Length: 145
Image (cartoon, rainbow, N blue to C red; front, side, top):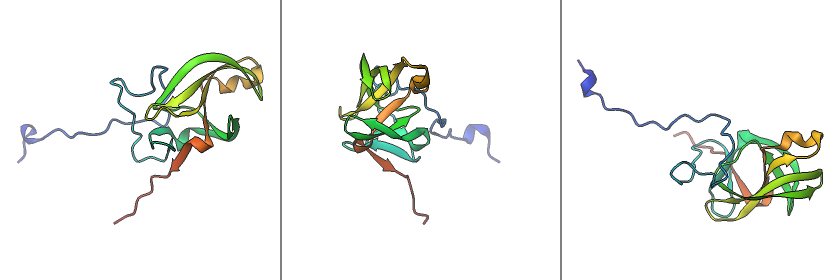
């Protein structure tokens, strides 16, 4: 019969919730500065270096405009570095935003909404715009053997 002292502890990945929350302004990576890996879940990654940027579950809308065309609105993003905040006139009015870059390669990928001045735009506060041309979709499909 096995005894408790014969058992070795299992190393398990910590659980992740569907909602990752906002990435820190100091880099968007974990506490020790390492890039966050979102595991085998469907993600959007940087088109330049393949660093994970957001979970597909965090996508709110594909109907936004970025600097260079179509952009997506996300609840949260990881592995991003936030630039300095500035007031910017956008198509939907004045907003306080900060540009975001990929922590993996430094490519500018979009911005985060820090403040919306119009009541109808307040839902964007704390959300992230990532330009479609800067990301690739990874469905995390696997073949059963």
